[in-house]
Length: 124
Image 1 (cartoon, rainbow, N blue to C red):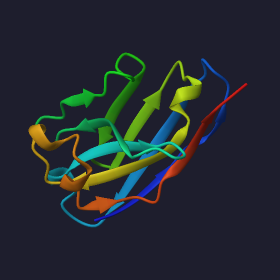
Image 2 (image 1 turned 135 degrees about the vertical axis):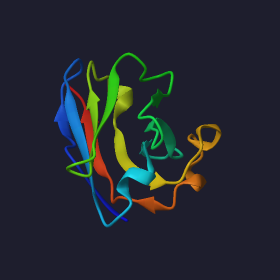
Image 3 (image 1 turned 180 degrees about the vertical axis):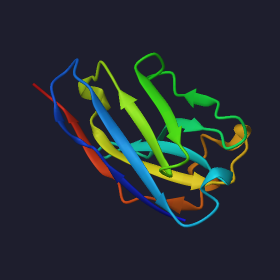
Image 4 (image 1 turned 30 degrees about the horizontal axis):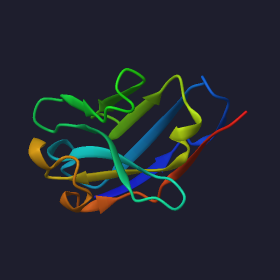
C-alpha cells in the first residue's frame, strides 16, 4: 500500500487543520493507520491510531481532546482533525499503515508503510 499525506500548513495558535492520508492499493481496510510527528531535532513520536478491526481510535495524551481521527473506507482515506493547535504541535506529520495490534500501535517499527509527511507549523 502507498500513502500520501497532505493538509499541513501554517496556522495560528488555537487554529485548526485537517490532515488527510490517502492510500492506494488493496487491503486498505485490513491495515491500522497511525499518525506520527517529528519536530526538528526530536525523535518521531506517535500521535494517534485507528484500528482496522473496529475503527476504535487511540491518542497520545498530548493531543487527546484536541485531535480526532476518522476513516473513510470508500475513499481509502484517513483524516486527522487537529483543533486548538499549539506551537508545540509544530512538526512534520506522517501517516503509516500496518497490521498492528493495539499493544504495538505506538511503535513506529510496527508499521510497514509510510507516507512522505506533511509540515504543520503553529505560529503567530
